[in-house]
Length: 110
Image (cartoon, rainbow, N blue to C red; front, side, top):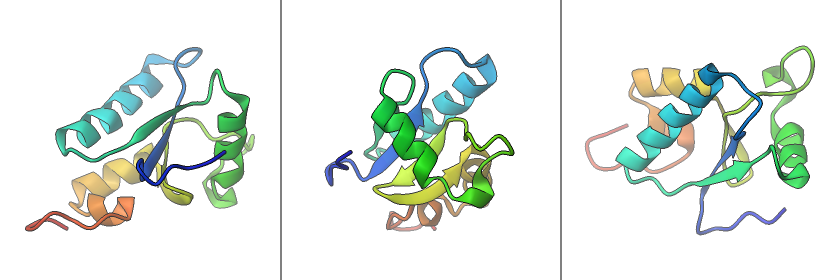
C-alpha cells in the first residue's frame, strides 16, 4: 500500500456492517478535519483487504482490543499511528489536536 504524500492523514473508514455509534464517530472525525481544512484521505477497509490488513498491522498492540481487531476510526499521519477515536476526542477536548495529528498548528492553536 503506497501512502501518498499529498494526503498526509489516513483514516480507516468502514462503510457498512457496523453500528450507528461507529458511523457517528467517523462523521465527527471527518467533520472536524473538513471544518479545519485539514487534508485527509479516507481508507475503505470494508471493501479493500489491503487497507484492512494495513490498518490491523499498524495499530500498536497496546491499542488493539482483546480480539486483536481494532475498529474504525483509526487515525494515521502517513505511516505514523496517531490514535483511535477516544484519543482523538481527548486531544480535541484538551486543545492539543494538531500535536495529536502530528501537524504544525495554525497560529494561535496547539
